[in-house]
Amino acid sequence: MKCLFWGKKKNKQKRSGLYGLRFLLLCIVLGQQKINCPPSPTVLSVLQCEEVIFIGVSLRLAGNDRVKDVIRLTDNDLLVLSKTLRSDLTVKGGFSLLGFRTCVKNTVLQENVALQSLDLLCNNIEAEGAERIAKSLHQNATLKRLRMTGNKIGNKGAMHFASMMQTNTTLEELDVSDCDLATQSLIAFAIVLNSNRSIRSINVSRPLLFSLQEETAVHMARMLAVNQTLRELHMGKHGMTDSGVERLCEGLMINRTLRYLDLRCNRITRDGAKRLSEVLRRNSTLEILDLSSNRIEDDGAVYLSEAVALPHCKLRALSVPNNSIGTTGLVSLTKAMNTNPNLTHIYIWGNRLEEPVCVAFSQLIASGRLLKDHTDVSPYEVDGRFYLAEMSHGLQRHYYWVPSYGQDGDPASNAALALNTSHCLDLQPC
Image (tube, rainbow, N blue to C red):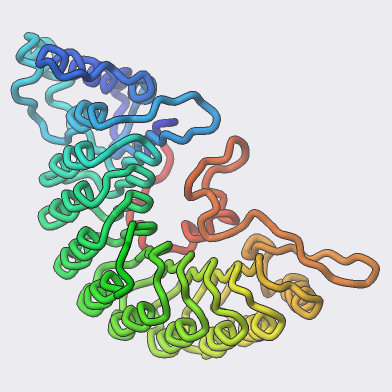
């Protein structure tokens, strides 16, 4: 649980505890209005930062911190937090009830909090809290990145976010994965993205779908055919089959802006991999492809390697762990890497790593063609035979958690952050 303040220094003014004060005042106001909102110690500890000097703010309030004891946020906490972090220059009602308007006029009420990134990972936020956040973003002009991962906002809460996206023109990244979305809200997101020109990245992984007709893939394909701003699409854990991939590829054939496609943990086989290879042959913009935990097998890997070997293929990272790929498929991928220098990151752990595969990857690493930090296997030799050991590397190994020691966001374990061009926030530590 931490608060990160990013951006260039604007001046030397200190704002110690200003947002903690704002938070406490709002809790008092809402208490007088008979709304039960006791101050959350977790939020208060984050907001009471000393010597806050910033233009933009990145606020992380994850509820799954393994190091500190945290209290997960609820819908009522978000009611206070949304008012605390509002970006307008005036506050009507609330503070005047306590007679604070005069004494904090030049501090609390007229502060423009330029919150650019808000991470609410794994809290207890539900549909009501999602509605409050969405309504606060209808006219917000600062927030660029919102992460709701792991909050059970459901279909109702997601619909509020879809409605917000119709008017909000600044939000660039929205993560509503593991939020119990349903078919209705997924279709709503796809329809809104037909006209939205600000969203660069959207994550709708792990919805609760009960239909086998691939409606979400159909609507996402139609969206990809017309959307010219989306750079990153996550559709993991959709139960997507080869027929869904086929429909999705129809839109990908036309799309010329998508850089990162995440289809991990679906039911894609060699036929789906063949369709994706056809996209790679014709669409030269795709740079990151995540097919982890599917079942493309040797045939699917061969299809992909044939596409990767083409000189115009710009794919930079391919993730195929746990795909039942054997020697034929994995060796063909190493040959494709020797042919096309664009592919620099490849992840294969969880497949059948027989000796020819171990030798091929050890040669790639020894020659410098494949860097150790750019793959999830490490070769070693015992009694003249080569083997591969697993490394904690991948596209998003730190997606759900922050390491208790070492570097947070290490490029080796989070290669997607280093490679991905969709992150539009140019935030550097002060």
